[in-house]
Length: 309
Image (cartoon, rainbow, N blue to C red; front, side, top):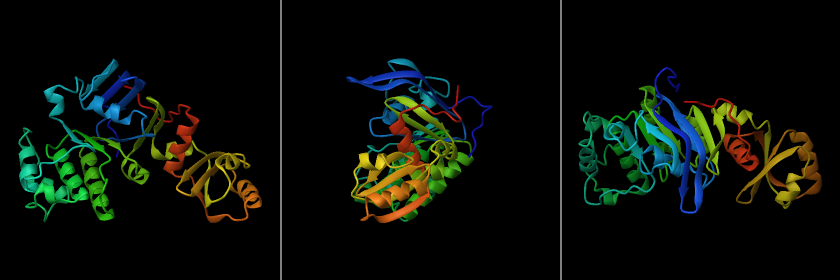
């Protein structure tokens, strides 16, 4: 999974400003995506991820700055013919069978992928004759993936691709995506599953409030948060946890708190002294999710391996 830096970029957002109603969705955002590169676009809800995807796929135009796909306007037919898109909100016709729907969609491309190969890569073998309206949510996502790869795209956009899928289906899709990257396709991935981003992406771009705040390889992003993650159930408030020795960040997932600390021993001594009811305690290296959470909380731009056009 390495980008070809000698070839022209596939997608470019340059100093893009975009308002959606009264909200400034993108505030001078720069993004470059190259052939053979999987870029995971991460950030909190409302950060500007969906707007960035909409600009690169030609569904929106920037108010200022430039959006290019294969060097031209993303709405240009030549660019659109080289792109495959799997969006969250896309629906399927209920009455067509899986085979009919995929075969119909293949007809939109000049040199489509063979039908049986497309069905196999998307994990749809055995479902070909089932009507799309009778599919489960995860099975519908597999059909949408088949549509995205049917034209053998040079740019593949995956928006929360594994929503509703079981573990086996997720891993099968990951394998298919890796094969697309290996043949030179560029992939833009948005996902709330940080393990998915780490499994597929060779580059992580974190955005918040319409700006890039971190850009680099997964290990480089995690390296920006020089910390250990202490996870536990505690009666202490977030403010009290943040005041413990060497703590650099606090977040919660349900009833479990995560403390990022530069010294697990120092933090644990104070934590155990202040709350003898501590439960479900684990200590581990900071994950990509920990790093992204901390970077968003800090809000400071970090570009360990930033791309420039």
